[in-house]
Each structure stands twice: as C-alpha cells, then as structure tokens.
Amino acid sequence: MGNQNKSVIASWVVPGLILMAAVVIMLINFSAKSSSDASEAVSRNLIRSIQGYKEDFLYQLDTLGAIAGPIGAVMEREGTWDEKFAADMTEILGECMDADRVVFCDVSGQGVDAQRRQVDVGEEEYFPRIKAFEKSSYIYTESNNSDNEALAKAIIVVERVGSGKDAYYFLMFYSMDRFKSLMSKSDFDSNSFLTVVDSEGKVLGAAGAVNSKLLKDGNLLEAIRPENAEQARTIKNRLDNGSRGTTAVTVQGESCTLAYVPFGENHWEVILGVSQGYVDKQISLQWENTKDMLTYLIIAIFVFICLVVGINIVSKIRNNEKKKELENKADTDLLTGLTNKLATERKIKAYMQQHPNSQSMLFILDIDNFKKINDTMGHAFGDEVLRSLGQQIGAIFRATDIIGRVGGDEFMIFLKGVSDKDAVRKEAKKVEQFFKNFQAGEYVKYAATASIGVAIFPQEGNDFETLYKAADQGLYKAKKRGKNQLAFYRDEWGLAEGEQPKTEEQEQQAK
Image 1 (cartoon, helix red, strand yellow):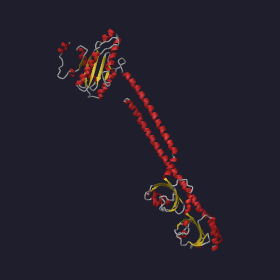
Image 2 (image 1 turned 30 degrees about the vertical axis):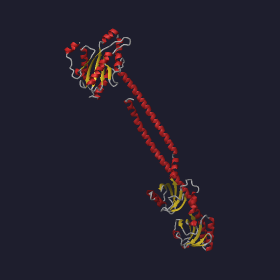
Image 3 (image 1 turned 90 degrees about the vertical axis):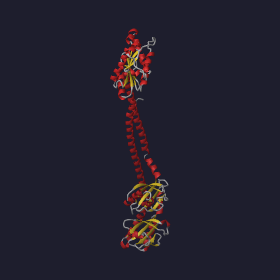
Image 4 (image 1 turned 135 degrees about the vertical axis):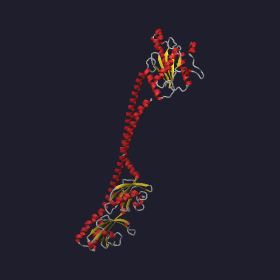
C-alpha cells in the first residue's frame, strides 16, 4: 500500500476514532447515569419497604391507644375513680387489646393491672418520663428484674385520663420480642434485618438477622463508626433531623445498605439493613434492559462508523488509484513504456531538491543513425527498435532509478545514489556493455548502437538545466569521437587511478 493510501486511511481513521471515542464517552456517561438511576430506584424501593414496616409497627402500637382512648373518655365522663371501677375498666381493656401488660395508675404510680392485681409502678425507671410526657405517647423501657421476661424490652403506650392532680394513666406494654414478627414474610435475603433505634443509635428492637455485626453491641452508630466515620455522621444527622435515606456501610467485612425513615416520635428511626450483594443484584436487575440496549447501541454505532469509514477509505483509495493510473498514463511514453520527457524531468528535479548532496549520474543517449534505420527498414521497425530498447534497458537498473524517453531517439537515465568513483565507472561500463549486446527485431535481428553522454550530480551541475547541459556536452564528445561510445563531461570520471586522459592526437590515431 502506497504512502498516499496510508495517508487516506489515516485521514479517515483518525476522525472515525475521535467520533467513536466521543460516542463511547457519551454512552459511558449515559451508562453511568443509568446505573445511578438504577441505584436510586433501588434506594427508593428500600425506603418504600421500610415505610411499610414502620406503618405496620405503628399500627400495632396505635391499636393499643385506639382502644384505651374511649375507655378513658368513659371514666372521665362518669367521674368515678374508685378502685373497683378502675379494675373493671382495666380488665376490659386487657381483654380487648393485644397488649403484653395493661396497668391503670394514678400520678403516684399506685394502681391495678388487667388481672385486678394491685401494682405500684412509681419506682420504675420509666415512670418519671410518663409523668413528664406531654405529646409523646411512646416510652421505651428496659428492665432486667421484670417478672415477665418478655417485657425486658418494651414500648409503653401511654393514654392520659383526667388532668392535674386527678390525672390517671393507662399503660399498655408492647414487648419488643413481638417486633421480630414484622419480618416474618420478608422479601429480602436472610442477611437482612430491621431495627428501631433512638437518636443515639441505641437498638430498641430488632428483627431478621439479629446477629448482624451492626447490631450485636446494641448500638448501630457505635458499630459502624470505627470503619465508616463519615457514614456514621450522615446517619446521625438524619436521625437528629428526622429525615430518610440510604447509606452503604461495611463492618468487619459485612457490607450492607441501610435504609431509614423517621418513626415520628422521640427522634426514633426505623432502619432496614439489606446485604450489599442483594442490593447490587437488584441494581443490576433494574438497569439490565438499559445495559442490553446500550450494548446493542454501542455495537450498532461501532459497525456504522466502521462501515462509513471503510466505505470512504475504499472510495478514496480507488479514487487515488484511478488518479494515480491516470497520472501514470500521462507520465508514460506509450511506445516504450518508459516515462515521457516532462515526467522524467519532473522526477529528476524532485530528487535533486530532496537530496542535494547525493552523488548521482545523468546519462543522455541517442541511437546512432536512427534516421537511416527508419529510411532503410521502415518506421515500424524503427518503432520496434525504440520499444525493445525501452523494455531491455529498464531491466538492468533499479526500480528507483529514473529512465525516460525524452525525444524521438533520445533517452535519459538518472541513477540515484552512486557513492564513489568506482561505482560511477561500474555503472558507465554497464550501460556501454548493454549496447554491445543490444539487438532489436523479432524476426530480423538488428544490433543498434548509441552515443552516450554522462554528467555527475552535483559536482557538474546542482540543478537540472546545468546537469543536462553537462551530460549533453558528454554526448557531443561521444558523437565527435565516432559514435557508439560513452563520454563523460569530465573525462577523469572514466579513468582508473593513475590513468591519463588521451590527447586529441591519440584519439585520432585510435580511430
């Protein structure tokens, strides 16, 4: 493939590659955005799921208060607070609701439970918070000394009855052991967990994978803070602000995504922990179709660009080949197949300009007595002599040398890069020897001779016109000396070391 064809390919391949790179970058950006969108979609799904869990949890707690409210209203309307009436109402409340314990007490903590037993909760750690509560109706409590192990961790739903010194409280206990039932039909894998934490990250209750490393020390924030300080700060801020979101964390090699929504009371947060493997799988499923579409699109664009570039390259190469073919035809002498005069001179001048110091040889040769050949043997045979000369002389030189027919019977040979005087004499001998063996004619063999003039570039001319005149002077010498020979513009080029040029008298005697 020629340099011109390589240039054509480069001129199309480079823009094609740039275009392809631009398209690929755009698709990569789109792919990254699609992946981000898929990740956000999964986060939204996780938040929706935990919102559902929170609503289920709140429903269980609110159901307790929903029953206690009307009973308290009845007690307020009757204005009766005696022990028997209070025991009756508490028993009814215990039978009507799904609470783990029901207590009715006054502001000192003295009261009765649903089993009509006398109780005193005034000394319990949670009671001062009950008395102080105004808006919050949920109080978390822990008791290691509880007679009921199920109530070791519980949420108390408080319903105030009356006001001031005559205030009474219905206390309905919800065991956090029941919280575990919320994930009994989880759509997530077995490594997922659900928890409720307070504003400091303390775990109030957990369901699912309760043995997770994030839960085992009883404080979610403390568990993730050593390896995920930035994420811990983010979660803490959201707990304080009562906001929702998702955060990926890794604790002791356990990677998961935490989704959280505010509980709505006490700055508590309901948090869902889902294994990162499950999340990644969901993300992959979310944008699988988009990924396939992008893959097909990239392939289609790649094929399209390759086709466009390929078609244009082939078209350009064909056009260049046609152009080159036309140029070659325009540069070619139709009779001999050698370059014509204009092309020969142009190529020699171009070489001189590009290699001004490269020693080279210019031969100018005329076929001896060519007019006589035409007159005696016919112009057709004369053409055959020229044709044979063009075919045979081209075979003895390099493909890089310049050989052309520059006149009717005049030829020009330019040998490139002839290094020294010995090489000059060797090439001159080669041309002389060629004409000693040259014969033309297919049926009638004719030994045509030629007179040859030689000049050396750049010593005898550093431009074409000067060099041509020098070679023409050599040709004049050869004809003057009797034709059928070669003569240098300066005879010393053809002499061996120590050999002296012949005088005119010696030349006359040689004739």
